[in-house]
Length: 279
Image (cartoon, rainbow, N blue to C red; front, side, top):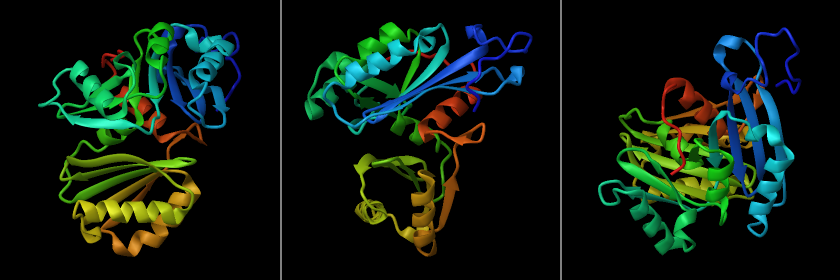
């Protein structure tokens, strides 16, 4: 990815916010931001921020705010998708929790916190309630008005909307945690985030969840994404036991980006006129 602002005379104008889309990734581990040009421009994407810090809930909002204010270009009037990577997410059936307030109430009853801090993604049959840090939602509403806010699990679930004639497992591996989405013929069975220290941790948790939901490995397809070395090694180990194993490389201009960012970008391409709003 190029970090150079386009020069005068180029087809794309970096200052013309209508020509660029902002993708932001926020987690307890760091902050990333990318500017993506309109496809008609033929211009490269730009890395605006890649910031990592020691994971801690204490002072997290302040670190996020400082990162944004130190990089004011992200505050320009871009259309935007923002991914909030968090460990605590609550999936609820939309038939029983029809409103976002219902979902927020349920989330608070399980994890505690303030109702005003809970965000909700609506995926039709299911809703996903999530929260990363107190005050983050209101900060994003002030700083990124009109942006669409996603949890990483919601994007993973939406990436497998087509029903499958078997069990389907999406497993995204990050630096210290991984997300696991398990579906049966398109029906969501389980969505969870787990910490890991070794490849064996991931394999153990995966097999334990499959056993819990009576998903035979011979009838389960796995799609790995995230940290390349870990997922490729794990895939090689598990290959003989599963129906199929695929590896998803999520790159932008030849450089690896978080899976959720890739999915948000490609969702925007598929649904060019979708409404983006914070909920």
